[in-house]
Length: 491
Image (cartoon, rainbow, N blue to C red; front, side, top):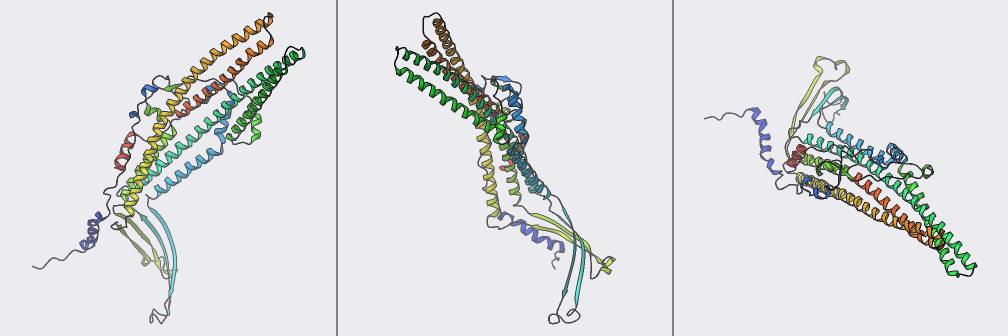
């Protein structure tokens, strides 16, 4: 029996089938990620956070709770034009452009070709009529190229780029939150330095009065030079404290000016802060996962992990065949007079299929690298999650602890104030001397200085808590469905 001849189409498809059969040579077997995202609700924090007060939502302009219009104006000025924010915004635009490139790779490209080429074949190469004649060709054509995304690799690259855009946008918001927090911290330092200068000035006045009394007692012959020297040392110490406080004032003003993006002369226009109020610490009435969903570092790291998971999908798609479609449609002729005739039409096109078989381990190593990138991104997210909860808990504990300390010191100051008042009363009644009054005044000033330092720490605890809560920002994080899909892609 005579065998049937193989059809031409079957002969053309035979190499394709053979290539598909060999596709197993480039395999993803044994490559997987090692780290999984932590569920925020699995981190036990309810007992620690339950004792805090509840607020409906943290204001995005959280610094206005301190009650100083000058502070409000400084923060708004900084947010309007600080150079570091321009850099953060530029990184966002850079990520957007990169996403645009990834999106463009998914679409067909069309280009116009206009070409003229000529050749002169010498007689020594070819006899007449080819040899010795110059021939030219004019070509006008339309190039069309397209790579169908059968395996979703191009879409995965685009989604990974979008994830990087989202992360850059969140990090730009984080830069604004950090800038506002630094402005408030420097402003609190400025207020504390002014309070320290007040205490140092009062201590200097007390020491000068003590020095005057000592000199009078020496002149009257009822005391020796030791009391005078002691008083002079107290005056010198008060001068040193005043100079240090003034230096802190100048440094805080210069820091604020730099945060505003201005020169040091801007510091001269910053007035003394008003008496800042420290709000009671409170948390939004949400579970920890939603609480941390407003933190820029947590949300940005989630987007980084999401982008890395899509990178894994793109790397896996490279193990499958790729198809490139190309076509050229145009007109060609040996001269311009025949270029637009019906016989000048030229067309070329068709699919090109490529399949990795042996590549020296490039694809497997690329997938291993993207798996490691995902593990790093997830590890960063898990770390930020734990750090975020710790910072919230630390800020709450600091605020509550400082409130107790301030209350204790104020009770001590009330006792010192009573002792000082009693000394004044006894002095006016002739039952004690001015030395007794000045001695009773010293612990009062020391307690005033301690209260000022504790109040500054309490204000900074408010800043820490507001920043730990995300500064009232409303951020868009990957959805749970998206996270699930990312985990599936990673596996």
